[in-house]
Length: 187
Image (tube, rainbow, N blue to C red):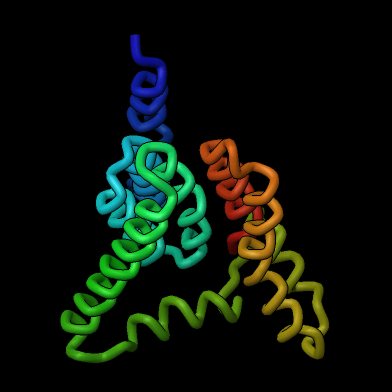
């Protein structure tokens, strides 16, 4: 009896997850990409882990923080030098390929990058939701907006260093902690 596979099947075969997909939410796809990243990293397959991580970073740029747990997981299977070079190199290769592909598909224009990433970083199109960012930006004075935009965008990256120092021996716990912080602070 394989508990991780059973729990994953219970989550993805849940009618509420299917209902969320029918509402045009891609959040379950993001979660699947992160799970596949961690599975490939734990298996020690650096190119595949880097591909899934690059795909996750292409969909949401905050997932770049998961490069540290991926490197730590691959380090357990291979050596430290090979893991860092392989993961970082393949991640840059796959990310460049995805952006080049979108550049060619969009008619040799980087409008996709500016409209999807830069608009999100500015928090211009926040709609009322249960997250803390919407309420925070609704109550804020315009004079302090640029400062708090910078702080809110940097929060997932700020937690990377202390968590990595403390949890470097436990890469799965590190990835889970970073995932919870990312979930808490994303718009």
